[in-house]
Length: 212
Image 1 (cartoon, rainbow, N blue to C red):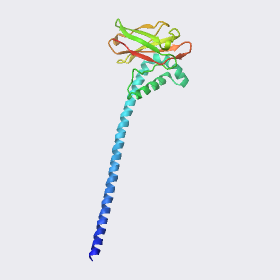
Image 2 (cartoon, rainbow, N blue to C red):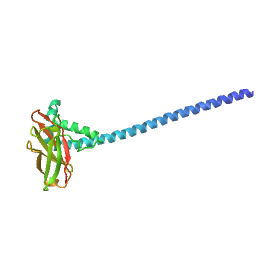
Image 3 (cartoon, one colour):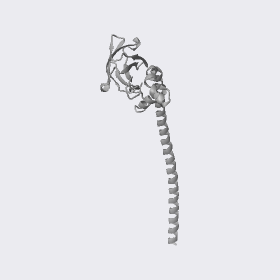
Image 4 (cartoon, helix red, strand yellow):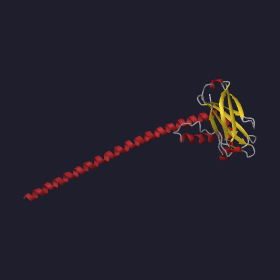
């Protein structure tokens, strides 16, 4: 009789444990669902922030494309022709890549207004002279001749997102660029690229911040 009672008690305990396991299983499933929802929410927030940063970068590059048109319509026309695209779209594509590598922020030191296999321009100095004039001294890299290259300079005011293109005299190595009086005292940058008249190619862009 006692043995039978023990068997009944044991069965009851086993059934109770089974119920506890079922309850724990339900709780674990609910916890997994909750964790999954939280992770998805965090991921959505992360994606939302990245999308926002991407949109802001695209908007800024679009503004730059509108202002820098005079320069890249020359410097990127050959690359655009090969790709069957408009130079504006090539400009955006090139500079959005640098934005992506810079946490979706424009890196003014890396902006490209041109593209090609020509030798680059070395900007030796860029400084303010007599208030509204930027004096730029430059040369070609790797011993390339200035006489064989048309050098173009683009003076840009970051704060106002305004710029102006300046052509140079072959072989000179120096150019005085008259700027808008509203630019005086603000951060300026000079971009430069060259067109090799013998090879028919442009160079990539180089830059230098103007000394105030």
